[in-house]
Amino acid sequence: IFSGIILFLTIRKCKSIKNPMINSMRNLFYFAILSTVANIGILNSQNIFLSYICYSLFFIGIDGLVYSLFKFSLYYVDLKINKQIMLTVVLSIFSIDAFIMFINIFFHIAFGIKSIVFQQDVFLLANHFFLYKLHLILSYVIIASVFAMMVFKTIVSPKMYRVKYLSL
Image 1 (cartoon, rainbow, N blue to C red):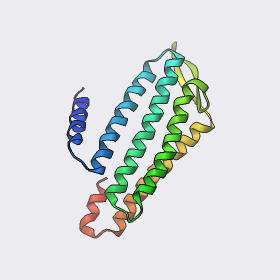
Image 2 (cartoon, rainbow, N blue to C red):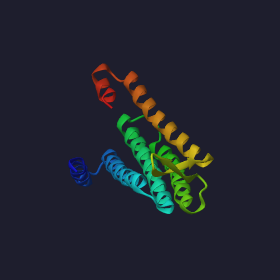
Image 3 (cartoon, rainbow, N blue to C red):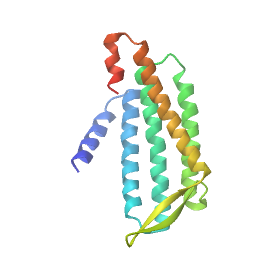
Image 4 (cartoon, helix red, strand yellow):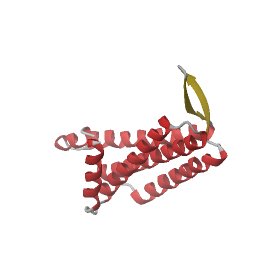
């Protein structure tokens, strides 16, 4: 509960600051909340349709989280590239992925749900298909690019600024 209050207050403070990095952080917090709530739904659901909804929202939340982290990092390291083109491409890819995760609720094209019995308890787990694996690869590639941006900036920055990038 305390963490939720801190997160809420941080989001509220972020609304008053007009800065692309701060906006990215605010969105990252929103997607973290979505993913957390969806994950709680996954853990407590005994209904297959509700599990599809919760898993889909969780994966959409992860898309948003990773995109927001990418956007924040792009502005934070301030690489001399066209940020708008890069962000538009990555956002388009994540939007398609999020759409696939959403329609999966009805068409089961990225993952299915299977029941697993463990010590007399029933758990509804996602059974991942090819499109989910693409979702996973996309997330890992973007996270790796964030890491690469930080490492690159750490290497090329003067010593006194390296701590800025190493801290992340």
